[in-house]
Length: 123
Image 1 (cartoon, rainbow, N blue to C red):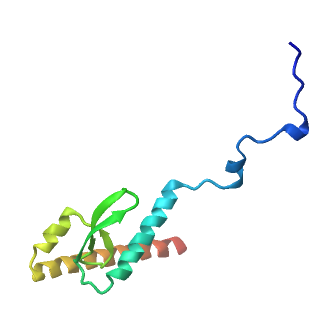
Image 2: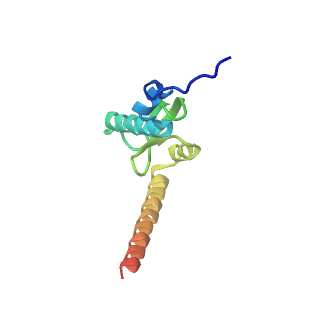
Image 3: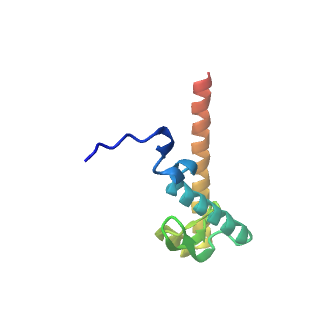
């Protein structure tokens, strides 16, 4: 057998040319954008619905299945339903309002605490 000659410069080619031309997509980033788009679409569809409304089963691209969604009792944000929502559904209006006030006070205290830390960093 005769030894083979090394390939010339013109014969050298990349084996994976298509990979080099198109950037690979991060699947987590794609799913995150799909979920954000789906939540934005649901928010537009149910913007006039009262807080605490159950939105039924909606497709979740991250989990790859239908998930029960709810419009949050306190913030109005659309999110997957949890067991605590059942507790809020069964409460009287007075008790639910008390929980809403507690939530608002806790959120306000957190915001004030964050502002205080920022002032310390600046001063």
